[in-house]
Amino acid sequence: MFSSGTFCHVVLAFAILTATGCNATNEIDYSKVNLISVGGSVMLDGKPLASAVITFEDPETGNFSFARTDASGNYTLQFDSQAKGVLPGKKLVRVSTVRSFPGLDGEDGDEEGESSGEEGSEGSDSGRKTEAVPSCYNKDTKLTAEVTESATSFDFDLKSDCST
Image (cartoon, rainbow, N blue to C red):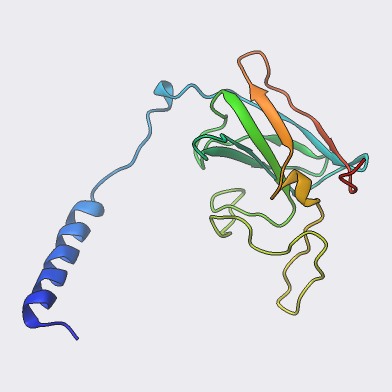
């Protein structure tokens, strides 16, 4: 499979990566990041949308902040698992009842988030949840928000029928 020379190089590279990677820290100096505290509520057909994940995504960089709605549909965005807030600017807003993130309320979900269910799909034998939010609010979102120092509260009243 490997020649003895190649094998030695692989072992050496692994040893170097292990020695340097395990001791490195990736701490963020949050005082240098202009995070804005943002929250609001999410309703679906006039009722609070509980346990949904909402993301505010920068359309240029793909960076995003995220939150899970509570029983009343309220949310407060997290920048990462340690800091609350979102960077200012124009954001694409996505809402999903099947998306999850590692570090969000102790979840071990998949990082890309689209863990299951297309809009309108039926549950499968694997026990995956069906997406309750139409694709016009998640995968093909039309929701946007402009986050500024003075614009920090965003309420979304979603409809099951995107055409209305």
